Image (cartoon, rainbow, N blue to C red; front, side, top):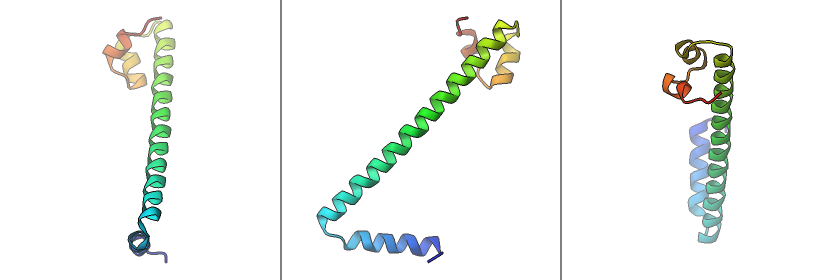
Length: 85
């Protein structure tokens, strides 16, 4: 079964044929996997933002102006102006 649509259809058929307890466990597992993926993505995003802020701090300490730092980091000028050195 290399066809993604066929595989998804088979998964759906199996899901619908399960008893209510098995279906509840399946749904709980799917929720857990979704929540875990969301947490990982959130952590990655937070790490990227913190990295950008640290680069902005370094560039400001080197004497770069706000506009240049904004362009280099992708952060907004208002975010950069709020950085405390």
